Length: 124
Image 1 (cartoon, rainbow, N blue to C red):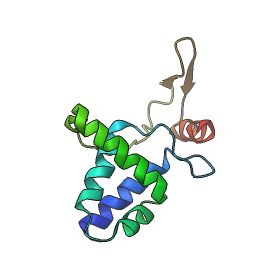
Image 2: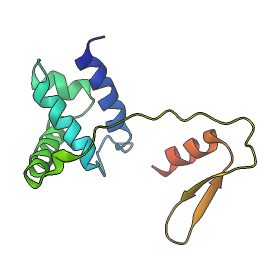
Image 3: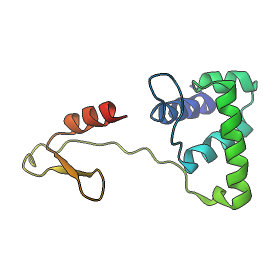
Image 4: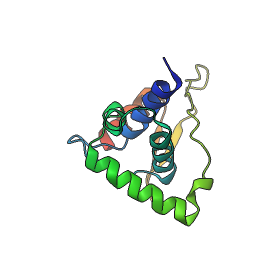
């Protein structure tokens, strides 16, 4: 797999976390927008093959480029690169929960990674 395709696979996974059931994008963080614009600028193929490769529509890509240019103008290109993190369950720490601070008043404790992931998928 070439570097461009591998980068697009990672971008596609990141973008999919900000899609609802109908395919609309919501809450794209600035660092993801910057990474998408940078990848789009480096893409050797057609623009259509790029946005189809990462699973978004032409209009969504236009919005991303517009937002990215605004971020570049404001100095947002100084954001660091995305670094994927692998979560590994710890077998001996069953009594230590993972705490998700939902808002200022509420927090939820999870004792297994699978339960946390299931909750986050349902909440999205």
